[in-house]
Amino acid sequence: MVFDEPSFKSLIRPVVDFPKPGVIFRDITPLFQSPKAMRLVVDSFVHRYIDADFSHIGVMDARGFLIGSIVAHELNKPLILFRKQGKLPADVLSESYQTEYGEAFLEVHADSLCEGDAMVLFDDLIATGGTLIAAANLARRMGARVYEAAAIIDLPELGGSQRLVELGIPAFTLTKFSLTEY
Image (cartoon, rainbow, N blue to C red):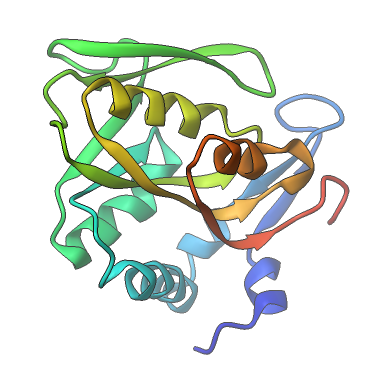
């Protein structure tokens, strides 16, 4: 399957007024139901990062787990879980952040990364950038750096990719949607 952005985008289902009125939710479930599309997504990320200089892959709870864990396996990289508050069993570091829906907290095991480690962060989409910025802050608190933030979808009108770049974190996505695009 050759990357064809219109065909690829057609597998991302718009769900109007979810989780609240006025929002168009970008549902990636159809991508996962298509073995060809899933292979395309994974291969696109693997090819991008196969020769890159980083040591770990960090994944955002929960949809970032789906792609990032496969890419970590394919690249033989350790997987770091960034979870919603209260989901990790050992000592954690916590970071608050703002989402488009309100305040939330992200946590990671305090012993996940060391000075000098570098990672690619994965999520399903970049909206305001809050989750990925919180993860980057947590990584920095452990002495690690973020090589790049990666996602399937960018919502550029919400400014998240730009916020990441302004903080010195390159951002890469496979496709983008405007806020009103169906």
